[in-house]
Length: 209
Image (cartoon, rainbow, N blue to C red; front, top):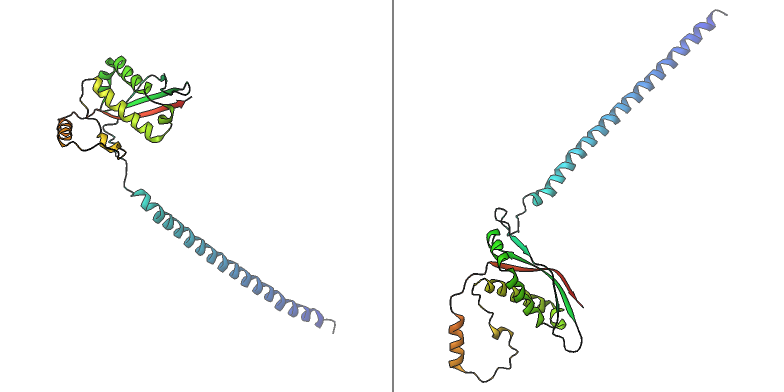
């Protein structure tokens, strides 16, 4: 009877070991399957993300340019020395400190303007001296000033620039109509004028005190 005991223990240990190995194999299979499933999901998500990004960026890449500036012919800027001038206010002493830059057709014209600079500055100072602080503090006043400087700078160089129609700024309190006088005035306004090579007037500084 003593010889039969080891045989029984050996036969009982064998199934136990086989069961453990089977569990380990199943666990490994589950882990491998989970890893494969996770890798596939990650690959699909990663592939979808760039596609979405490309669709979002496509409109921006093909968006039309709205800039009207010709890169082959960039604008030419001619900065003027700052102007400091007493204004035409009657109730108080007010003055303006204004920085002006002219935008012109090309560098050649800018060089020509430099030879006329004393006369151009004189014309600008005459315009500023007749302005009040109330006029210059308003946007419309600044825009009107820019137009006056633009025309004056060209006229100083002998370029005939047409004045804006004064009827546009009329308050509606006209005198009785005078057909003959108006006809003459209109005839004068229709005369041929030169295109203004001074494209724009930019203010780099604008202080009213």
